[in-house]
Image (cartoon, rainbow, N blue to C red; front, side):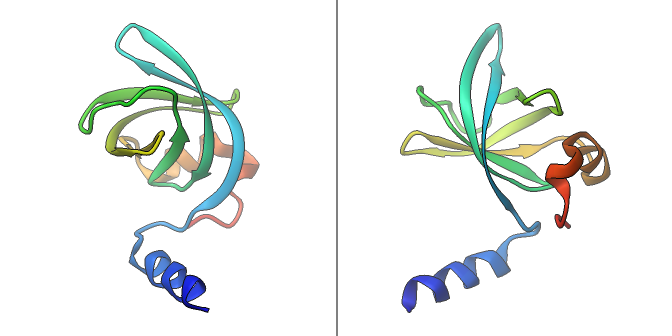
Length: 105
């Protein structure tokens, strides 16, 4: 099962563990708002499916349902997805995620 082994290695390299989600989200980039979908979230960041490419280093504001409302920075972009790192401390992110944060460290 090489796929599972690779996944385990990648997970061990991450600073924060992630929770798989499929939730509607909104991404504000400057004065533009985009509807998108969140596919995983951690206390350090979030992965979103977006319709337009967004350049690495772009500062954004992400909202996940009525819970998470955080500033973030695009750290990678490709294949219709972006990875964001939150600018807030993990405790603030945990508080805003509510029950979605269960098990995240």
